[in-house]
Image (cartoon, rainbow, N blue to C red; front, side, top):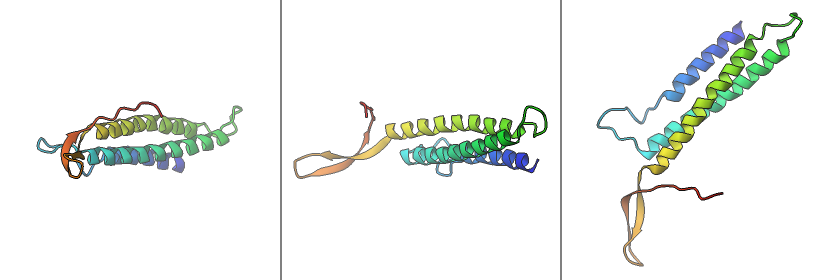
Length: 132
């Protein structure tokens, strides 16, 4: 019972942590920068890996305690472990989407004016993956 309560608190805490973004307040005047999207992506991927790892551990503990003849546990740890693994999937997806958004935002790129002189100007960059 303690394991299940601990796992529920861990899952709830990770869901809240993954959605927290201290660099972007969401106001009308605030503009999301590529740094804020990268920070959000990093937080979501870390939370997803922690949730995936704890879900796999819970699933394995439930598998060890579960038996078909009824002498072991009732398999609740397996259910919570499976739910934690399934809950990590949206965090991975959002983390990769935020990383992709960060690549599409404005940044300062050096623009050559002559062969000796270049200046960093705001530019819009698009990343197109053309293979490996």
